[in-house]
Length: 288
Image (cartoon, rainbow, N blue to C red; front, side, top):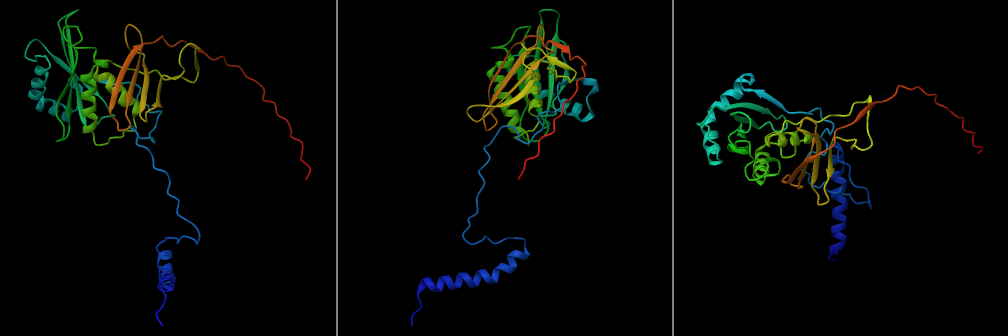
């Protein structure tokens, strides 16, 4: 008699399950119980910053390190890239062979794959020229220039909101080994430093309270309505008054917008040291 196909397949499945069950259990694989399905967890949407990162990172300022205090490795990298920096700077309207130039390192731990330098030619009040240079530490990438001031005037538009600054920063982030850094505040501070600021974020101290007319949070990361994220922080070191920075990133990590505007000074006052008594009550027992 010719066996039925359905009965044959069912018998074969039961036999294979019985034979493989001990092996799966020995390997730590639990067979699915009958009548149950495996639930696949929902995918995590991409974000420009590592969601598991420490949002209270201690990086609250950017160090500007004089050339003589740079490490030997960084000094050698700057020396080897000197001709490339001069060439790209000339293409942006800066002549390193004209006048007396100096540079200092912009220390950005959030972007470890690059050496950042700020070049300055100071001919006195009203005649200061400044630009930033990004030098890749590895084989990938190239030298990039961020114009800031030429004879005390901004080129094209102010560097913090300039499309050239945003484009250079996007290329720098692509060249970094980690496309999703956890130090989001350090990333924002680095952008501000490359654009000419010397940013310093004041963190609220536990013994002080912020007045009602000033936002209580001086640095935070928020989700953007289109799936990206926005970095906001207040730069207390800006002159003549503090500036609030805002940087909008797409979900893929691309910076699409940067703004900065003056904000009021943070007004703080000491919290009075008052002691109080904690009152307690006994809850009545519930009869079963």
